[in-house]
Length: 111
Length: 117
Image 1 (cartoon, one colour):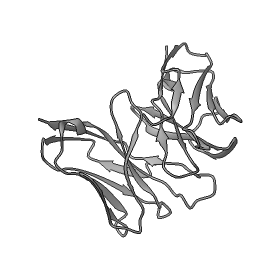
Image 2 (cartoon, chains in turn yellow, purple; image 1 turned 30 degrees about the horizontal axis):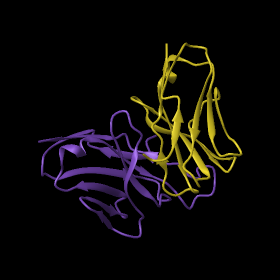
Image 3 (cartoon, helix red, strand yellow; image 1 turned 180 degrees about the horizontal axis):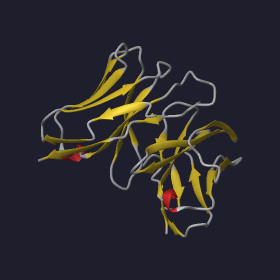
């Protein structure tokens, strides 16, 4: 157990809908990262937040957004969902930019 | 463009054998190279990591070999066990970068390792 928690574990929704994925980092970690894992693209970095501020942005679609709250938990919002958004979404946390510990992931299925 | 290239895609090894997975990178700004192990239905878990100031790092049965001039690094699993059957990912990061890629891990495509008993 990495100490990073993610909810929900599974999410099934329809195209065009909006969902929110939640992540709680390890105790003491100020950085939260979001990654997308799919069969065709592999593990792709989406975004990095440090202590509430966005610090790096990767291959994140404009339909996706994230935020980190004062209690350091983070949410990834996915809107106008398409079939191709079906994937595993992982959250990771670290103290700053050192070792990243991954959560168990949220499996998103868009029908 | 894949920043980190990993091979092979899949690997089958007999119990007790040596598993070797290779990765190559182009960006000389990378200064941190972790390996992650992922079991089905689980998140990636850090296995071992190396920085370019050393050529080898060993932790138990797992060894990273690093060749800075060739921009290559590899994972060796000695005495491979059926419990090692998982997907392994190499990754790279520029920890010194304080710009727009801060904290970004670039992953290889993964190697599915199967260890037969």
